[in-house]
Image (cartoon, rainbow, N blue to C red):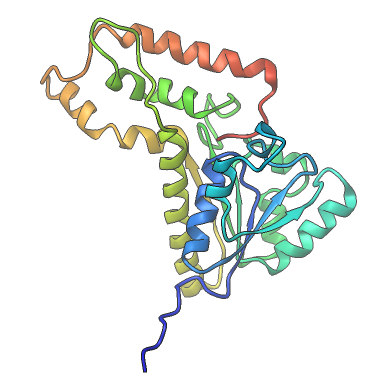
Length: 250
């Protein structure tokens, strides 16, 4: 009689605080590997959910299938207490808020690690948890501009061109998934959880190996006169987000 193979993360609990694409895609991949994933949303819902009020937007359905839905107000003491109870039982927390948001809520890595030393805490952000760009808002467009993807996608005699898909969001989501799986293996060996951080900018730059190689090897394969336009596009992309007070990273 044929037996069904168990998926590697069966029996594990993931708390998915992800918003838009980056975090939710990581959570989706963890679910594909067998984990039980709780999608935790604020009372107003995921940003994508709010784009279309009459029905659930298709991207929301795509990236959150096979997850269970939980609404928690992490700014309210009761919501925070409930999250801490869940985190005490969880194997993984995934979030892609702007750097420092979870710390300001009193639910950052140091707090959760003390609460659950075996927890793996995965965070996706635009530019990393340290460095001069740490607090800049980041969307897929911003990262495509600042990483050089728009330059490599453009034409020599035209302005930079954004890649059609949200490539930086999904590249970062895949990297975060891989880092979390590695941290879970580390936990099996040591009993200790870990902080896993993936910056969208770093994940995107690695995908430019061919374009960077063409430039460094002087093959002339990268549009030269789009460079200044790329810098300008990056600054415009960042400036356009700042007034809105973006509180998450795609």
